[in-house]
Image 1 (tube, one colour):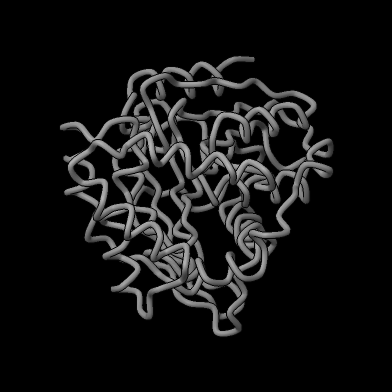
Image 2: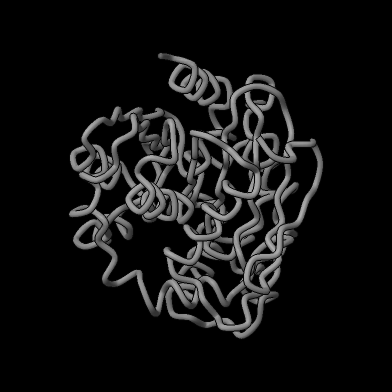
Length: 288
């Protein structure tokens, strides 16, 4: 195993500076955050998983504390290549990998391309395919129409979908409003998380690249049979953006997968149900 000293680190890969944090003790779990374009500090304390695991928290290219690729390379295979380079740099043999949201798509791409390099895989509130499931999103959003924040947040969501933003600051302001839809309920815990993370930078270039180059044609389902490691698929019952039907599709196309649906949770299960989330991850990763 290479340099696994706790702390903040940088690794330069083909001119791109990839930032990562190491903390905790125990078996290694690499955590790839979502977005694309979101700051990996949005993981927060990750439900206290560093009590049982050594967490390697990757800041994806062009996001958070990592630098921007000059060639604008933001495809799933580019992110997956960064994961493999980091694994090799740290000399990790059979780490576990958890991908959240867009990070889950990266994790699937990685597990397809490198089927022997992982011990276990966690796919957290993510999708292998959008297709007809996009029809579910508008109905799910309307479930919040009686909330006092609905009108402003709905306008922000529509503006993002229409690409009505011109800068990172514009996108960050939209995200601060629309984030409220990503919770089962915008309660005290959700408001506390929102306050802690709403000012983290959001990068528009990775998001635009995904929307324009991959989202419409995304379909990893035919390749998932190549994923040979045990996989835990996690989804919040009320996740409106990567919903239960998407999670079921992932499970159904994997050779060895377990689906865990968390009640009273949306896209932020580790924030809304931290104890249950940590227990599920711990039980899965520490089981033989």
